[in-house]
Image (tube, rainbow, N blue to C red; front, side, top):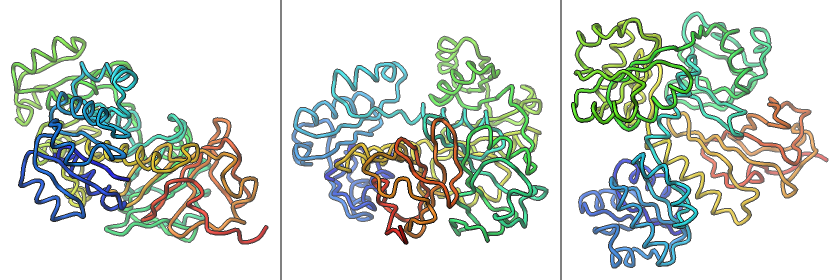
Length: 457
């Protein structure tokens, strides 16, 4: 596909990296010449320095022949204007980042009346992910498929968990839950395990199943999960605003600590049902005064990665059951494995994965066989994808043990009639099934891409 990326902030740079790796023809536009030069030198893309809402600049970028234009500057208004101009010039798909809650409430209008293909909001999506982490407190990360009926969770194995030294083929000896361990991160190594794989302490497991089965699995193997009833949020960002609205619906009490007076006033007007403290949330004495040691969870959402990490560590030392830190630089991820932080969230990575999934679906000529959902997991080294089986899918009705799946690909789950099936050799793919695929280094656009050949009829 020919794709134009307008804006080279954190999201724009990550998107450029993903799109270049997938072999698309990419043109980047940004007013900062140094950013343009850096990204052009780093990836196989073309760069233009200029205003992403300028008609002449967009024509120079070739938007009239573009399959997609993705506007992800720091300005909502510029992104909307850029998308409208590109649509008028002939771009096939237009995607805009819109972060302001006032604009976000008009997503249907922007799509249906103004013709945008996709409206993305990193802060709202980050809040969704944090809410899932809070409601499933055992997991480090929770991704959902099939409209929430199937989940993929990340668990870190520590001393005392019954899975340590256990061979996967013996999993039924510790739990009767219907789950599948579909990927493992051990140090810097990423593994798609088979039945002979032995789980060790400090492994990160990626497990699929229904919410009920996953919760039972965590309980069976020794993850003690207590319901989170109150949350302290440090930093009154947009993420905090979206998160509090979601948690309040669940009956979870929230408290924000924000040092900026004007922001405190704004939040008190928009979310009067939460407690807002005007103070420095990085101050140890303030945290003790606000009863952080009695809180179930701490979520650090300041603008500095390092501060978020330190505050999350401090929260754990003070007795918080679950600590979550927003981290924009995932290069810190390897270091975080050695720290006592329960979860990290990266808004730009969430949005980039959604966009890549959307574009991969559009790049498939037959949208009925395209990617339904895509997540990048295990430090972006593994993809988890959802497809729907239809009459064009190969090998329907045939046992999986008779089908040759490509290397480094695993069928992690099948949803049939709202029931989660952990696939075994005698299971089959049937029309209407939703299939979850986990893959390393394979570019999968449609379900048939996972097959090589039938071993025998």
